Length: 285
Length: 340
Picture 1 (cartoon, each protein chain N blue to C red):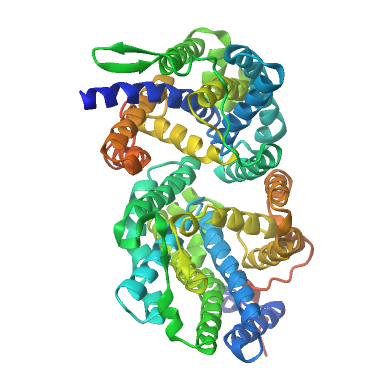
Picture 2: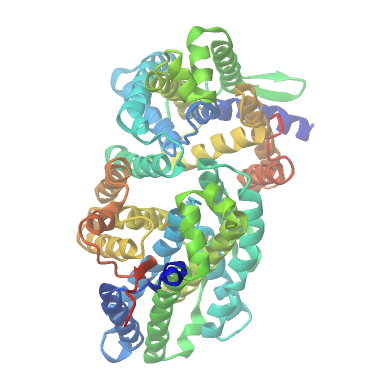
Protein backbone atom coordinates (compact mmCIF):
# COMPACT_ATOMS: atom_id res chain seq x y z
CA UNK A 1 0.00 0.00 0.00
CA UNK A 2 2.86 2.30 0.85
CA UNK A 3 4.36 1.76 -2.61
CA UNK A 4 1.02 2.21 -4.36
CA UNK A 5 0.72 5.48 -2.47
CA UNK A 6 4.22 6.49 -3.66
CA UNK A 7 3.21 5.63 -7.22
CA UNK A 8 0.08 7.77 -7.04
CA UNK A 9 1.87 10.69 -5.41
CA UNK A 10 4.67 10.36 -7.98
CA UNK A 11 2.27 10.59 -10.89
CA UNK A 12 0.69 13.67 -9.31
CA UNK A 13 4.16 15.19 -8.82
CA UNK A 14 4.87 14.36 -12.44
CA UNK A 15 1.98 16.65 -13.40
CA UNK A 16 4.01 19.54 -12.01
CA UNK A 17 7.18 18.52 -13.85
CA UNK A 18 5.28 18.04 -17.10
CA UNK A 19 4.34 21.71 -17.03
CA UNK A 20 8.04 22.66 -16.89
CA UNK A 21 9.07 20.08 -19.46
CA UNK A 22 6.57 20.96 -22.22
CA UNK A 23 8.12 24.35 -22.93
CA UNK A 24 11.64 22.99 -22.93
CA UNK A 25 10.70 20.17 -25.32
CA UNK A 26 8.96 22.65 -27.62
CA UNK A 27 11.90 25.08 -27.72
CA UNK A 28 14.49 22.37 -28.28
CA UNK A 29 12.35 20.71 -30.91
CA UNK A 30 11.90 23.91 -32.89
CA UNK A 31 15.18 25.78 -32.39
CA UNK A 32 17.64 23.28 -30.87
CA UNK A 33 17.99 25.76 -28.03
CA UNK A 34 17.97 25.06 -24.30
CA UNK A 35 16.96 28.07 -22.28
CA UNK A 36 19.09 27.85 -19.12
CA UNK A 37 16.89 30.48 -17.46
CA UNK A 38 13.77 28.27 -17.91
CA UNK A 39 13.61 27.50 -14.18
CA UNK A 40 14.38 31.06 -13.15
CA UNK A 41 11.44 32.26 -15.26
CA UNK A 42 9.13 29.93 -13.29
CA UNK A 43 10.43 31.41 -10.06
CA UNK A 44 10.17 34.97 -11.39
CA UNK A 45 6.56 34.42 -12.43
CA UNK A 46 5.79 32.75 -9.09
CA UNK A 47 7.18 35.68 -7.14
CA UNK A 48 5.31 38.19 -9.30
CA UNK A 49 2.16 36.15 -8.72
CA UNK A 50 2.67 36.08 -4.95
CA UNK A 51 3.22 39.83 -4.89
CA UNK A 52 0.10 40.39 -7.02
CA UNK A 53 -1.96 38.17 -4.74
CA UNK A 54 -0.82 39.90 -1.57
CA UNK A 55 -1.14 43.47 -2.82
CA UNK A 56 -4.52 43.11 -4.53
CA UNK A 57 -5.90 40.19 -2.54
CA UNK A 58 -6.38 38.02 -5.62
CA UNK A 59 -7.27 34.34 -5.57
CA UNK A 60 -4.95 31.80 -7.23
CA UNK A 61 -6.95 31.48 -10.44
CA UNK A 62 -7.23 35.23 -10.87
CA UNK A 63 -3.45 35.39 -10.45
CA UNK A 64 -3.17 32.72 -13.13
CA UNK A 65 -5.32 34.76 -15.49
CA UNK A 66 -2.92 37.66 -15.01
CA UNK A 67 0.31 35.63 -15.09
CA UNK A 68 -0.25 33.62 -18.26
CA UNK A 69 -0.54 36.65 -20.59
CA UNK A 70 2.43 38.20 -18.78
CA UNK A 71 4.44 35.01 -19.34
CA UNK A 72 3.49 34.92 -23.02
CA UNK A 73 4.73 38.51 -23.38
CA UNK A 74 7.91 37.69 -21.50
CA UNK A 75 8.63 34.73 -23.78
CA UNK A 76 8.00 36.78 -26.89
CA UNK A 77 10.33 39.50 -25.58
CA UNK A 78 12.99 36.93 -24.67
CA UNK A 79 12.99 35.59 -28.20
CA UNK A 80 12.97 39.01 -29.88
CA UNK A 81 15.63 40.59 -27.68
CA UNK A 82 17.96 37.67 -27.02
CA UNK A 83 17.31 34.30 -28.57
CA UNK A 84 16.73 35.35 -32.19
CA UNK A 85 20.28 36.67 -32.22
CA UNK A 86 21.84 33.44 -30.98
CA UNK A 87 19.78 30.73 -32.66
CA UNK A 88 21.86 28.66 -35.06
CA UNK A 89 24.04 25.60 -35.58
CA UNK A 90 26.48 26.42 -32.78
CA UNK A 91 24.93 25.71 -29.36
CA UNK A 92 27.45 27.88 -27.51
CA UNK A 93 26.00 31.41 -27.99
CA UNK A 94 22.47 30.48 -26.94
CA UNK A 95 23.72 28.57 -23.91
CA UNK A 96 25.98 31.39 -22.79
CA UNK A 97 23.36 34.08 -23.36
CA UNK A 98 20.67 32.24 -21.39
CA UNK A 99 23.21 31.23 -18.75
CA UNK A 100 24.10 34.89 -18.22
CA UNK A 101 20.41 35.73 -18.15
CA UNK A 102 19.85 33.08 -15.49
CA UNK A 103 22.62 34.54 -13.31
CA UNK A 104 21.24 38.06 -13.72
CA UNK A 105 17.60 37.03 -13.10
CA UNK A 106 18.44 35.01 -9.99
CA UNK A 107 20.32 37.86 -8.38
CA UNK A 108 17.77 40.45 -9.47
CA UNK A 109 15.03 38.40 -7.77
CA UNK A 110 17.25 38.11 -4.71
CA UNK A 111 17.39 41.89 -4.54
CA UNK A 112 13.69 42.48 -5.07
CA UNK A 113 12.21 39.65 -3.00
CA UNK A 114 15.16 38.72 -0.68
CA UNK A 115 16.23 35.11 -0.12
CA UNK A 116 13.09 34.19 1.89
CA UNK A 117 10.83 31.38 0.80
CA UNK A 118 7.27 32.43 -0.02
CA UNK A 119 4.12 30.74 -1.16
CA UNK A 120 0.81 31.67 -2.67
CA UNK A 121 -2.23 31.44 -0.36
CA UNK A 122 -4.75 29.16 -2.05
CA UNK A 123 -7.78 29.77 0.16
CA UNK A 124 -7.85 26.19 1.45
CA UNK A 125 -7.53 24.54 -1.94
CA UNK A 126 -3.97 23.43 -1.18
CA UNK A 127 -4.90 21.39 1.89
CA UNK A 128 -8.11 19.70 0.72
CA UNK A 129 -7.87 16.01 -0.09
CA UNK A 130 -10.01 13.01 -0.87
CA UNK A 131 -9.49 9.46 0.33
CA UNK A 132 -9.59 6.66 -2.24
CA UNK A 133 -9.00 3.14 -0.96
CA UNK A 134 -6.80 4.22 1.91
CA UNK A 135 -4.74 6.69 -0.11
CA UNK A 136 -5.02 10.41 0.49
CA UNK A 137 -5.13 12.29 -2.78
CA UNK A 138 -4.68 16.03 -2.59
CA UNK A 139 -7.15 18.11 -4.55
CA UNK A 140 -4.47 20.55 -5.73
CA UNK A 141 -2.12 17.87 -7.18
CA UNK A 142 -5.10 16.44 -9.08
CA UNK A 143 -5.89 19.87 -10.51
CA UNK A 144 -2.19 20.21 -11.47
CA UNK A 145 -2.27 16.87 -13.25
CA UNK A 146 -5.50 17.74 -15.04
CA UNK A 147 -3.94 21.01 -16.24
CA UNK A 148 -0.81 19.15 -17.33
CA UNK A 149 -2.85 16.68 -19.39
CA UNK A 150 -4.90 19.49 -20.90
CA UNK A 151 -1.80 21.54 -21.78
CA UNK A 152 -0.02 18.55 -23.33
CA UNK A 153 -3.12 17.57 -25.25
CA UNK A 154 -3.71 21.13 -26.43
CA UNK A 155 -0.10 21.61 -27.49
CA UNK A 156 -0.06 18.31 -29.34
CA UNK A 157 -3.32 19.15 -31.09
CA UNK A 158 -2.05 22.59 -32.02
CA UNK A 159 1.13 21.14 -33.50
CA UNK A 160 -0.76 18.52 -35.51
CA UNK A 161 -3.89 20.31 -36.63
CA UNK A 162 -3.42 24.05 -36.93
CA UNK A 163 -1.76 26.12 -39.64
CA UNK A 164 0.62 27.56 -37.07
CA UNK A 165 1.52 24.07 -35.88
CA UNK A 166 2.41 23.07 -39.42
CA UNK A 167 4.59 26.16 -39.79
CA UNK A 168 6.30 25.28 -36.52
CA UNK A 169 6.99 21.72 -37.56
CA UNK A 170 8.21 22.88 -40.95
CA UNK A 171 10.64 25.34 -39.36
CA UNK A 172 11.79 22.61 -36.99
CA UNK A 173 12.65 20.11 -39.69
CA UNK A 174 14.22 22.48 -42.22
CA UNK A 175 14.44 26.22 -41.65
CA UNK A 176 15.53 27.07 -45.17
CA UNK A 177 12.93 24.99 -46.93
CA UNK A 178 10.31 26.43 -44.58
CA UNK A 179 11.31 30.01 -45.37
CA UNK A 180 11.07 29.22 -49.09
CA UNK A 181 7.42 28.32 -48.62
CA UNK A 182 6.74 31.70 -47.07
CA UNK A 183 7.21 30.96 -43.39
CA UNK A 184 9.02 33.61 -41.38
CA UNK A 185 11.18 31.53 -39.01
CA UNK A 186 11.81 34.45 -36.65
CA UNK A 187 8.08 34.97 -36.16
CA UNK A 188 7.53 31.25 -35.68
CA UNK A 189 10.36 31.11 -33.14
CA UNK A 190 8.94 34.08 -31.23
CA UNK A 191 5.54 32.40 -31.05
CA UNK A 192 7.12 29.09 -29.93
CA UNK A 193 9.01 30.74 -27.08
CA UNK A 194 5.93 32.77 -26.15
CA UNK A 195 3.96 29.51 -25.83
CA UNK A 196 6.81 27.77 -23.96
CA UNK A 197 7.09 30.55 -21.39
CA UNK A 198 3.32 31.00 -21.35
CA UNK A 199 2.94 27.44 -20.06
CA UNK A 200 5.31 28.42 -17.26
CA UNK A 201 2.66 30.94 -16.20
CA UNK A 202 0.42 28.00 -15.22
CA UNK A 203 3.37 26.16 -13.68
CA UNK A 204 4.34 29.20 -11.59
CA UNK A 205 0.92 29.42 -9.91
CA UNK A 206 0.85 25.70 -9.13
CA UNK A 207 4.45 25.64 -7.94
CA UNK A 208 3.85 28.47 -5.47
CA UNK A 209 0.59 26.89 -4.29
CA UNK A 210 2.10 23.43 -3.80
CA UNK A 211 5.25 24.50 -1.98
CA UNK A 212 7.40 27.52 -1.33
CA UNK A 213 9.56 29.38 -3.83
CA UNK A 214 12.82 31.27 -3.30
CA UNK A 215 15.02 33.08 -5.86
CA UNK A 216 17.67 30.32 -5.86
CA UNK A 217 15.22 27.51 -6.73
CA UNK A 218 15.31 27.95 -10.51
CA UNK A 219 18.23 25.61 -11.17
CA UNK A 220 16.41 22.62 -9.73
CA UNK A 221 13.31 23.28 -11.88
CA UNK A 222 15.48 23.52 -14.99
CA UNK A 223 17.09 20.18 -14.16
CA UNK A 224 13.71 18.46 -13.58
CA UNK A 225 12.37 19.77 -16.88
CA UNK A 226 15.51 18.58 -18.65
CA UNK A 227 15.42 15.14 -17.06
CA UNK A 228 11.76 14.70 -17.97
CA UNK A 229 12.47 15.59 -21.60
CA UNK A 230 15.44 13.21 -21.88
CA UNK A 231 13.75 10.34 -20.00
CA UNK A 232 10.65 10.64 -22.16
CA UNK A 233 12.52 10.98 -25.40
CA UNK A 234 12.98 14.00 -27.56
CA UNK A 235 10.61 14.63 -30.38
CA UNK A 236 7.13 14.62 -28.94
CA UNK A 237 5.24 16.54 -26.29
CA UNK A 238 3.67 13.33 -25.00
CA UNK A 239 7.20 11.98 -24.54
CA UNK A 240 7.98 14.91 -22.27
CA UNK A 241 4.72 14.34 -20.38
CA UNK A 242 5.43 10.65 -19.80
CA UNK A 243 9.06 11.42 -18.90
CA UNK A 244 7.76 13.80 -16.23
CA UNK A 245 5.57 11.01 -14.84
CA UNK A 246 8.54 8.63 -14.66
CA UNK A 247 10.66 11.30 -12.95
CA UNK A 248 7.89 12.09 -10.47
CA UNK A 249 7.39 8.41 -9.59
CA UNK A 250 11.16 7.86 -9.24
CA UNK A 251 11.44 10.81 -6.85
CA UNK A 252 8.37 9.81 -4.84
CA UNK A 253 9.65 6.25 -4.41
CA UNK A 254 13.11 7.60 -3.54
CA UNK A 255 11.62 9.82 -0.84
CA UNK A 256 9.88 6.78 0.69
CA UNK A 257 13.20 4.93 0.86
CA UNK A 258 15.03 7.84 2.47
CA UNK A 259 14.14 11.55 2.52
CA UNK A 260 17.68 12.42 1.43
CA UNK A 261 17.45 10.08 -1.53
CA UNK A 262 14.37 11.43 -3.34
CA UNK A 263 15.92 13.90 -5.78
CA UNK A 264 18.94 11.64 -6.21
CA UNK A 265 16.65 8.75 -7.22
CA UNK A 266 15.31 10.93 -10.04
CA UNK A 267 18.84 11.71 -11.20
CA UNK A 268 19.76 8.00 -11.09
CA UNK A 269 16.77 7.04 -13.23
CA UNK A 270 17.79 9.77 -15.68
CA UNK A 271 21.37 8.40 -15.85
CA UNK A 272 20.08 4.84 -16.24
CA UNK A 273 17.88 5.87 -19.15
CA UNK A 274 20.84 7.67 -20.69
CA UNK A 275 22.98 4.55 -20.30
CA UNK A 276 20.49 2.03 -21.61
CA UNK A 277 18.11 3.93 -23.87
CA UNK A 278 19.62 7.28 -24.93
CA UNK A 279 16.73 7.98 -27.30
CA UNK A 280 14.43 8.05 -24.27
CA UNK A 281 11.89 5.56 -22.99
CA UNK A 282 9.22 6.66 -25.44
CA UNK A 283 11.40 8.11 -28.20
CA UNK A 284 11.94 6.69 -31.64
CA UNK A 285 15.45 5.35 -32.15
CA UNK B 1 66.79 25.06 -65.82
CA UNK B 2 63.92 22.60 -65.70
CA UNK B 3 65.60 21.03 -62.69
CA UNK B 4 65.11 24.19 -60.68
CA UNK B 5 61.42 24.42 -61.30
CA UNK B 6 60.99 20.75 -60.45
CA UNK B 7 62.53 21.26 -57.06
CA UNK B 8 60.07 21.79 -54.22
CA UNK B 9 60.10 25.37 -52.98
CA UNK B 10 62.33 25.98 -50.01
CA UNK B 11 60.05 26.69 -47.09
CA UNK B 12 60.57 27.11 -43.43
CA UNK B 13 57.82 26.79 -40.85
CA UNK B 14 57.77 29.73 -38.53
CA UNK B 15 55.95 28.99 -35.30
CA UNK B 16 57.24 31.58 -32.89
CA UNK B 17 56.97 35.35 -33.08
CA UNK B 18 58.76 38.20 -31.31
CA UNK B 19 55.70 38.89 -29.17
CA UNK B 20 55.50 35.19 -28.40
CA UNK B 21 59.11 35.06 -27.22
CA UNK B 22 58.63 38.06 -24.94
CA UNK B 23 55.44 36.56 -23.51
CA UNK B 24 57.13 33.20 -22.99
CA UNK B 25 60.00 34.84 -21.10
CA UNK B 26 57.48 36.75 -18.94
CA UNK B 27 55.53 33.55 -18.36
CA UNK B 28 58.65 31.71 -17.14
CA UNK B 29 59.47 34.67 -14.87
CA UNK B 30 55.91 34.68 -13.55
CA UNK B 31 56.04 30.96 -12.72
CA UNK B 32 59.36 31.41 -10.92
CA UNK B 33 57.96 34.44 -9.13
CA UNK B 34 54.92 32.43 -8.00
CA UNK B 35 57.10 29.60 -6.71
CA UNK B 36 59.26 32.10 -4.79
CA UNK B 37 56.29 33.86 -3.12
CA UNK B 38 57.15 32.85 0.47
CA UNK B 39 60.23 35.07 0.19
CA UNK B 40 58.50 38.16 -1.12
CA UNK B 41 54.83 38.00 -0.19
CA UNK B 42 52.75 37.91 2.97
CA UNK B 43 50.42 35.01 3.75
CA UNK B 44 47.38 37.13 2.81
CA UNK B 45 48.87 37.94 -0.57
CA UNK B 46 49.71 34.30 -1.21
CA UNK B 47 46.11 33.31 -0.47
CA UNK B 48 44.84 35.97 -2.84
CA UNK B 49 47.24 34.87 -5.58
CA UNK B 50 46.20 31.27 -5.00
CA UNK B 51 42.60 32.22 -5.65
CA UNK B 52 43.68 34.03 -8.81
CA UNK B 53 45.61 30.97 -10.00
CA UNK B 54 42.54 28.80 -9.35
CA UNK B 55 40.45 31.12 -11.56
CA UNK B 56 43.07 30.98 -14.32
CA UNK B 57 43.20 27.19 -14.24
CA UNK B 58 39.43 26.58 -14.07
CA UNK B 59 38.79 29.11 -16.82
CA UNK B 60 41.45 27.59 -19.05
CA UNK B 61 39.99 24.12 -18.55
CA UNK B 62 36.57 25.45 -19.53
CA UNK B 63 38.16 27.21 -22.49
CA UNK B 64 39.71 23.95 -23.73
CA UNK B 65 36.30 22.25 -23.40
CA UNK B 66 34.04 24.91 -24.88
CA UNK B 67 36.47 26.84 -27.05
CA UNK B 68 38.25 23.95 -28.74
CA UNK B 69 36.45 20.66 -28.13
CA UNK B 70 32.95 22.12 -28.55
CA UNK B 71 31.87 20.65 -25.22
CA UNK B 72 30.03 23.30 -23.22
CA UNK B 73 30.03 22.23 -19.58
CA UNK B 74 28.34 23.91 -16.65
CA UNK B 75 29.34 21.14 -14.26
CA UNK B 76 33.12 21.16 -13.89
CA UNK B 77 32.62 21.79 -10.17
CA UNK B 78 31.78 18.07 -9.99
CA UNK B 79 35.45 17.21 -10.43
CA UNK B 80 36.71 20.03 -8.23
CA UNK B 81 34.60 18.82 -5.36
CA UNK B 82 35.39 15.15 -5.99
CA UNK B 83 39.14 15.62 -5.75
CA UNK B 84 38.77 18.12 -2.89
CA UNK B 85 36.89 15.46 -0.95
CA UNK B 86 39.43 12.82 -1.98
CA UNK B 87 42.19 15.00 -0.51
CA UNK B 88 40.33 15.39 2.79
CA UNK B 89 39.60 11.67 3.07
CA UNK B 90 43.17 10.65 2.21
CA UNK B 91 44.89 13.20 4.44
CA UNK B 92 42.43 13.44 7.33
CA UNK B 93 40.91 9.96 7.53
CA UNK B 94 43.79 7.83 6.29
CA UNK B 95 46.71 10.00 7.39
CA UNK B 96 48.39 10.32 4.00
CA UNK B 97 50.80 13.26 3.72
CA UNK B 98 48.47 16.05 2.53
CA UNK B 99 50.88 17.36 -0.11
CA UNK B 100 51.22 13.90 -1.59
CA UNK B 101 47.46 13.44 -1.23
CA UNK B 102 46.84 16.38 -3.58
CA UNK B 103 48.38 14.35 -6.38
CA UNK B 104 46.80 11.05 -5.35
CA UNK B 105 43.37 12.70 -5.23
CA UNK B 106 43.65 13.47 -8.96
CA UNK B 107 42.94 9.80 -9.61
CA UNK B 108 39.34 10.36 -8.48
CA UNK B 109 38.36 12.85 -11.22
CA UNK B 110 40.37 10.78 -13.70
CA UNK B 111 38.38 7.64 -12.90
CA UNK B 112 35.02 9.43 -12.59
CA UNK B 113 35.37 11.40 -15.82
CA UNK B 114 35.39 8.27 -17.98
CA UNK B 115 31.88 6.95 -17.19
CA UNK B 116 30.55 10.53 -17.03
CA UNK B 117 31.73 11.22 -20.54
CA UNK B 118 30.49 7.90 -21.88
CA UNK B 119 27.01 8.83 -20.63
CA UNK B 120 27.01 12.53 -21.42
CA UNK B 121 28.35 12.38 -24.95
CA UNK B 122 25.02 10.84 -25.95
CA UNK B 123 23.32 14.16 -25.32
CA UNK B 124 23.54 16.53 -28.23
CA UNK B 125 24.60 20.16 -28.14
CA UNK B 126 22.96 22.21 -25.44
CA UNK B 127 21.59 19.15 -23.62
CA UNK B 128 25.19 18.07 -22.94
CA UNK B 129 25.64 21.22 -20.87
CA UNK B 130 22.61 20.59 -18.67
CA UNK B 131 23.71 16.96 -18.36
CA UNK B 132 27.05 18.03 -16.86
CA UNK B 133 25.09 20.05 -14.32
CA UNK B 134 23.04 16.98 -13.37
CA UNK B 135 26.29 15.03 -12.85
CA UNK B 136 27.57 17.76 -10.52
CA UNK B 137 24.24 17.64 -8.63
CA UNK B 138 24.52 13.85 -8.34
CA UNK B 139 28.03 14.22 -6.89
CA UNK B 140 26.77 16.81 -4.42
CA UNK B 141 23.82 14.69 -3.31
CA UNK B 142 26.00 11.58 -2.98
CA UNK B 143 28.50 13.53 -0.85
CA UNK B 144 25.59 14.83 1.27
CA UNK B 145 24.52 11.25 2.01
CA UNK B 146 27.91 9.53 2.29
CA UNK B 147 29.07 8.78 5.87
CA UNK B 148 32.69 8.38 4.63
CA UNK B 149 32.84 12.14 3.97
CA UNK B 150 30.76 13.04 7.04
CA UNK B 151 27.62 13.58 4.89
CA UNK B 152 26.14 17.07 4.90
CA UNK B 153 28.24 18.34 7.81
CA UNK B 154 31.47 18.41 5.83
CA UNK B 155 35.07 17.88 6.91
CA UNK B 156 38.01 19.88 8.25
CA UNK B 157 41.65 19.43 7.37
CA UNK B 158 43.13 19.71 10.84
CA UNK B 159 46.25 17.73 9.89
CA UNK B 160 47.55 20.94 8.34
CA UNK B 161 48.28 22.09 11.90
CA UNK B 162 51.31 19.80 11.84
CA UNK B 163 53.01 22.15 9.42
CA UNK B 164 54.34 25.61 10.21
CA UNK B 165 52.89 28.66 8.49
CA UNK B 166 56.05 29.02 6.43
CA UNK B 167 55.90 25.40 5.27
CA UNK B 168 52.29 25.85 4.25
CA UNK B 169 53.17 29.05 2.39
CA UNK B 170 55.87 27.20 0.47
CA UNK B 171 53.40 24.48 -0.47
CA UNK B 172 50.73 26.97 -1.54
CA UNK B 173 53.23 28.93 -3.64
CA UNK B 174 54.49 25.80 -5.36
CA UNK B 175 50.91 24.77 -6.06
CA UNK B 176 50.22 28.23 -7.52
CA UNK B 177 53.17 27.82 -9.86
CA UNK B 178 52.06 24.29 -10.72
CA UNK B 179 48.47 25.37 -11.45
CA UNK B 180 49.58 28.05 -13.88
CA UNK B 181 52.29 25.87 -15.40
CA UNK B 182 49.92 22.96 -15.98
CA UNK B 183 46.88 24.90 -17.14
CA UNK B 184 48.48 27.63 -19.26
CA UNK B 185 51.84 26.00 -20.09
CA UNK B 186 50.24 22.60 -20.59
CA UNK B 187 47.52 23.95 -22.87
CA UNK B 188 50.08 25.94 -24.86
CA UNK B 189 52.24 22.85 -25.35
CA UNK B 190 49.18 20.78 -26.25
CA UNK B 191 47.88 23.34 -28.75
CA UNK B 192 51.28 23.52 -30.46
CA UNK B 193 51.54 19.74 -30.74
CA UNK B 194 50.00 17.55 -33.45
CA UNK B 195 46.96 17.18 -31.20
CA UNK B 196 46.60 20.93 -31.13
CA UNK B 197 46.55 21.05 -34.90
CA UNK B 198 43.81 18.41 -34.88
CA UNK B 199 41.95 20.27 -32.15
CA UNK B 200 41.99 23.57 -34.03
CA UNK B 201 40.81 21.79 -37.17
CA UNK B 202 38.02 20.25 -35.12
CA UNK B 203 37.06 23.60 -33.58
CA UNK B 204 36.71 25.14 -37.03
CA UNK B 205 34.69 22.28 -38.48
CA UNK B 206 34.34 18.86 -36.84
CA UNK B 207 33.06 17.14 -39.97
CA UNK B 208 35.89 18.44 -42.18
CA UNK B 209 38.43 17.56 -39.49
CA UNK B 210 37.10 14.00 -39.31
CA UNK B 211 37.43 13.69 -43.09
CA UNK B 212 41.10 14.65 -42.76
CA UNK B 213 41.73 11.77 -40.38
CA UNK B 214 41.16 13.51 -37.04
CA UNK B 215 39.60 11.13 -34.56
CA UNK B 216 37.07 13.66 -33.27
CA UNK B 217 35.47 11.36 -30.71
CA UNK B 218 38.76 10.30 -29.14
CA UNK B 219 40.05 13.86 -29.05
CA UNK B 220 36.87 15.10 -27.34
CA UNK B 221 37.12 12.29 -24.81
CA UNK B 222 40.78 13.14 -24.11
CA UNK B 223 39.99 16.82 -23.59
CA UNK B 224 37.07 16.03 -21.30
CA UNK B 225 39.19 13.74 -19.10
CA UNK B 226 42.13 16.16 -19.09
CA UNK B 227 39.85 19.06 -18.12
CA UNK B 228 38.36 16.93 -15.34
CA UNK B 229 41.82 16.22 -13.93
CA UNK B 230 42.82 19.88 -14.34
CA UNK B 231 39.71 21.00 -12.44
CA UNK B 232 40.47 18.28 -9.90
CA UNK B 233 43.89 19.79 -9.27
CA UNK B 234 42.28 23.19 -8.71
CA UNK B 235 39.76 21.66 -6.32
CA UNK B 236 42.38 19.83 -4.27
CA UNK B 237 44.62 22.90 -4.00
CA UNK B 238 41.75 25.30 -3.33
CA UNK B 239 40.17 23.23 -0.56
CA UNK B 240 43.55 22.50 0.97
CA UNK B 241 43.97 26.25 1.38
CA UNK B 242 40.37 26.58 2.66
CA UNK B 243 40.93 23.83 5.28
CA UNK B 244 37.18 23.05 5.19
CA UNK B 245 34.89 21.36 2.73
CA UNK B 246 31.16 20.66 2.68
CA UNK B 247 28.84 19.59 -0.15
CA UNK B 248 27.47 23.04 -1.11
CA UNK B 249 30.94 24.63 -1.22
CA UNK B 250 32.64 21.65 -2.88
CA UNK B 251 30.12 21.49 -5.73
CA UNK B 252 29.40 25.20 -5.98
CA UNK B 253 27.98 26.10 -9.42
CA UNK B 254 29.53 29.54 -8.92
CA UNK B 255 32.76 28.10 -10.38
CA UNK B 256 30.99 27.57 -13.68
CA UNK B 257 29.68 31.13 -13.60
CA UNK B 258 33.19 32.43 -13.02
CA UNK B 259 34.80 30.29 -15.72
CA UNK B 260 32.16 31.22 -18.29
CA UNK B 261 32.39 34.92 -17.47
CA UNK B 262 36.20 34.91 -17.64
CA UNK B 263 36.43 33.04 -20.92
CA UNK B 264 33.56 34.81 -22.69
CA UNK B 265 34.58 38.32 -21.68
CA UNK B 266 38.31 37.70 -22.12
CA UNK B 267 37.93 35.93 -25.44
CA UNK B 268 37.04 32.31 -26.12
CA UNK B 269 39.48 29.88 -27.79
CA UNK B 270 42.59 31.80 -26.79
CA UNK B 271 44.93 31.55 -23.84
CA UNK B 272 45.38 35.32 -23.86
CA UNK B 273 41.64 35.75 -23.36
CA UNK B 274 41.70 33.65 -20.20
CA UNK B 275 44.46 35.79 -18.69
CA UNK B 276 42.69 39.04 -19.59
CA UNK B 277 39.33 37.74 -18.39
CA UNK B 278 40.76 36.52 -15.10
CA UNK B 279 42.34 39.88 -14.42
CA UNK B 280 39.05 41.67 -15.15
CA UNK B 281 37.06 39.28 -12.99
CA UNK B 282 39.54 39.46 -10.15
CA UNK B 283 39.61 43.25 -10.10
CA UNK B 284 35.82 43.46 -10.44
CA UNK B 285 35.44 40.98 -7.59
CA UNK B 286 37.71 43.01 -5.29
CA UNK B 287 36.02 46.31 -6.11
CA UNK B 288 32.39 45.38 -6.50
CA UNK B 289 32.16 42.04 -4.67
CA UNK B 290 30.75 43.83 -1.62
CA UNK B 291 27.63 44.79 -3.60
CA UNK B 292 26.63 41.12 -3.62
CA UNK B 293 23.55 40.44 -5.70
CA UNK B 294 23.66 43.58 -7.86
CA UNK B 295 27.26 42.76 -8.75
CA UNK B 296 26.17 39.38 -10.07
CA UNK B 297 23.34 41.00 -12.02
CA UNK B 298 25.96 43.11 -13.82
CA UNK B 299 28.15 40.03 -14.37
CA UNK B 300 25.20 38.13 -15.84
CA UNK B 301 24.14 41.00 -18.08
CA UNK B 302 27.72 41.39 -19.33
CA UNK B 303 27.83 37.69 -20.19
CA UNK B 304 24.59 38.06 -22.16
CA UNK B 305 25.91 41.12 -24.01
CA UNK B 306 29.16 39.37 -24.93
CA UNK B 307 27.24 36.35 -26.24
CA UNK B 308 24.99 38.65 -28.29
CA UNK B 309 27.34 41.28 -29.65
CA UNK B 310 31.02 40.45 -29.06
CA UNK B 311 31.43 36.72 -29.28
CA UNK B 312 35.21 36.83 -29.60
CA UNK B 313 35.58 38.80 -26.37
CA UNK B 314 38.22 41.38 -25.57
CA UNK B 315 41.12 39.39 -26.96
CA UNK B 316 39.22 38.88 -30.21
CA UNK B 317 38.93 42.65 -30.61
CA UNK B 318 42.61 43.15 -29.79
CA UNK B 319 43.73 40.37 -32.13
CA UNK B 320 41.69 41.84 -34.98
CA UNK B 321 43.64 45.09 -34.65
CA UNK B 322 47.16 44.01 -33.72
CA UNK B 323 48.74 40.74 -34.80
CA UNK B 324 50.89 40.17 -31.75
CA UNK B 325 49.85 36.92 -30.05
CA UNK B 326 51.31 36.12 -26.64
CA UNK B 327 50.94 32.42 -27.16
CA UNK B 328 51.24 31.89 -30.92
CA UNK B 329 49.96 28.52 -32.05
CA UNK B 330 49.73 29.18 -35.78
CA UNK B 331 52.16 27.73 -38.30
CA UNK B 332 53.47 30.19 -40.88
CA UNK B 333 55.07 28.95 -44.06
CA UNK B 334 57.93 31.26 -44.97
CA UNK B 335 59.28 30.97 -48.49
CA UNK B 336 63.08 31.03 -48.46
CA UNK B 337 64.94 32.62 -51.35
CA UNK B 338 67.64 30.50 -52.98
CA UNK B 339 70.87 31.49 -51.46
CA UNK B 340 73.74 31.81 -53.93
